Every structure is written in structure tokens, then in C-alpha cells.
Image (cartoon, rainbow, N blue to C red; front, side, top):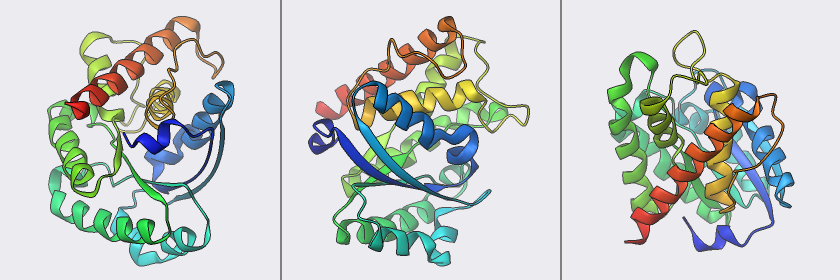
Length: 222
């Protein structure tokens, strides 16, 4: 986690991804949590269903936003199975974006997603891909997939997967938002209210997210 992030009370963030970012308005959930912790998060989302980062790059809209938007951070979310099937393609796309992001004086953030429900063993490949390119570029990795994996190993509820066994339920997006809060602001999500979930579920999701953030931070500090 970049030291510069932890002191921020105000961030302007561009999210570039697909339905894993857009579903349940993940950026909005993060902004609500940040506000509850006394932080201000302004955001813009560029999303296309099933889109890869290369598709976003070739489309030009994302690059234009990076160059003109005055963002503090740019969050990149790769198509969910590409880190497994073709990590080198992912690395190439992230490198292209990272160069543009740095030239715009912003910082790159990588949104590590989760494995499909019928292929949980593939989480290691996803985690390794995001961590590898994150280390290479000095980017911040938000370990959402790690938090999902940890909770799924211990609990059957709340349900994180929608019926398609891929996209997140509200609980899944809430878990992701908690990990973003912990990573970008170094603020614990524990104790937050709202989001349309009952307290027991919120407590479990908040705790899993914060543990994942602390575990990743501890590994990087060694």
C-alpha cells in the first residue's frame, strides 16, 4: 500500500472495468463508507459488460478520461478470467494504462477480483497475477479476491455469488467495498452501518475485509 494513500481525506478516483465494478454500484458503496469515516471520495466509472482492459484501451474513452480528469487514483479491473487464461495479456494492458496514469500524475490501483464459484481453486492464479504486476509497477493492489476466498473457506452465509456463480450479490459487492476502504484509506470498515444488510452479515463481511487488508499489508512490509 502506497504511504501517500493513507493520509488522504479526499480522493478523486476513476474506475475502469466491467460489471464486476458496476454491479450494485461498487464505487458508490465505497464513497458512502468513506463519507462515514470522514473522507470525501469523488468518482467516475467507465464500464462495459465483459470488457477487458485492452478493450478499454483500444476504445480510447478511458485514456481520454485519464488525461483530462485530474484524478488522484485510477482503478483498473481486468476481465475476471483473463488473469487465469492469459496473464501476459493482462500485464501488457496494465503496463499501457500505468504509463498513461503516471504521466497524468495519478496512481494506479489494481482491483483484484475473485474466482468463479465453480472454479475456486483458480483464485491463486488471479491473486498471483495481480500481485505480480502490482509489484512490478509499484501499484496498489486491492485484495478483494483474497477476502472472498477467506470468507468462503469458513462461511456459507452471507451468499457472495449471484445465481450465475460469477457476479456479486449485494453482500459480495459490500465485501469488495470494505476491502477498498481498508486499502485506500487504511480505515477499518468494522462498525459501519447501513447498506441494506443485517448487522450479523455486515459484521462478518467487515471483519473478513479488514483481516485481508491487514494480512496483505503485513506481507508487503516484510
